[in-house]
Amino acid sequence: MLSLPIPDAASAVIDEAVKAFTDSVRSLFTPSIGTNVNLATADVIVTAVARCTSKETHGTLSSTLASFLSTAS
Image (tube, rainbow, N blue to C red; front, side, top):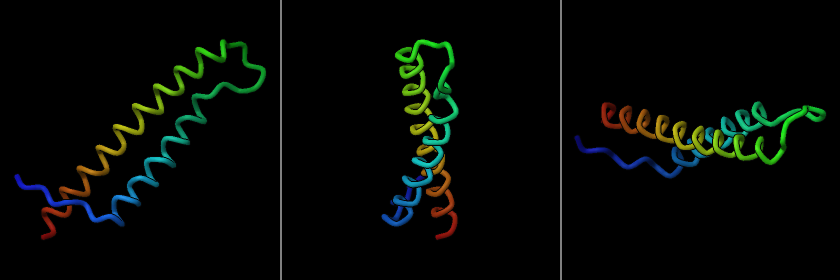
């Protein structure tokens, strides 16, 4: 199946959506002040979760949009 390129404007929107979603996930996994956890370990976990979230969200949104564009044309 031939995939159509995603327009720059749509790609920018996807990037912004991914950033917003990743920031939300990052804030959920960041320990609260006064929490008795190792902050270095927590930071490693938060970074890993944010990286996975960003990659998967970007892939899902991009493939969904590409699929939509291919059926719309």
